[in-house]
Length: 531
Image 1 (tube, rainbow, N blue to C red):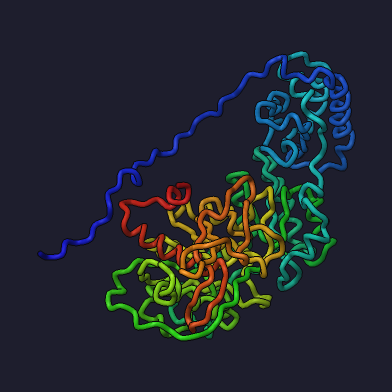
Image 2 (cartoon, rainbow, N blue to C red):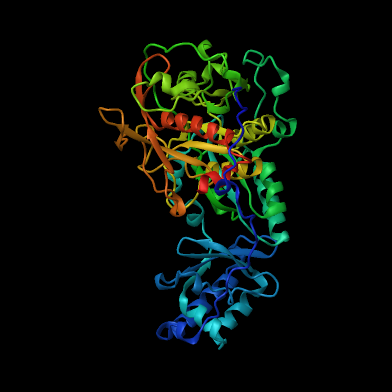
């Protein structure tokens, strides 16, 4: 009997997906029993005085287009969404809540409405207002300590060195009012136009000696010639949300940036690191039908091993000089993605072969010339658009510092946007303890639209055993239960040596994911993650 052609599986459980439908949240009407009567009068006086003080100190406030940001602190017994003080912050011309922050909410207030708000707090008898007033502990201006969330010295020391200072990620103030957004952009443009706060270094095309023979892989000119701040300014005007990578020359500049009022959050840029592999002997030749195997994009240190020339489906130019790349790590993860089972025949791994796309972006450990997050995201955006048929992207790298327990990182957030924009699956390493400051998973492992992989040990029979003592644990920020999967992390690879790290288990899972996508009809990467 002739062999029948292999067709994608038609599995209704995996293909029946409900399209997203916007639904208005259920608004619970507040009731008189929700009023905390014993503190109502005291809070009326306190909050009205605090709002009045904001009005009297308006000359010292950071005002953008007539609006300011304030922190609405809630009592610990009032943090449930049913106690959100929506009614008190619902002015006719722009007084409104922007969203939750630690311990309360961020609000956008029109300065001209402060007196009216103070009067409402003192005198209103509506149930909604009385409930809100009794639940709010304080109303104060958004301060530099809220922006940094730690000391300026701590941010400065943890920030990665750049050419003329250190790198920080600035999340611009999320005003909803167009006038306020425009004023924030103007304020930052004026600040960046001085020698005090230069914008981040522009991306460059690889030099002639940087493996740059194919000019078709050049990045779009608009990405190369625009600074991170210029792109962020455009995004802020359009959406109200924007981030920029900026270099500051010293700690005093960082403190001034935090006090400018146009930043909602400032994070240090962290260097990207990988783990160190071993050495040994290689397995047999690759199969002749390798051209029919699925592709895994290896976002790593690049590949130089000629052993895998036949397995490379495509390659990109390095983000910076090829001589600085961690090609050792890139070669090792490539060997595992192509045929990890052949290197580890003592483990019950499926006999899967893959081709690879090479995306060289990770520098060797200790190299200062590392891509900043904005450069890396712009580079990946361009690369993914050039390879629409590659659905699985292996990310065997991490920042060198653990995630913030409350906030998703810049890189984690931006990768989520890319995953949804291009319908690709990022398979991301959870990170390793030896190369990370902190004891929790490291960005971009907080990407909620990616598949995060941790490590597992194996017993004497090759079966999965206890947790890996090298991989970082979860949870991630905002209640994320990470990692999503764990797999063998002590593995033999190119060269024959054995090493342990979450990068290696990630490469195995990437190969599995690539074959899974090949055998499903119209697979959705986002569905794949959340199931």
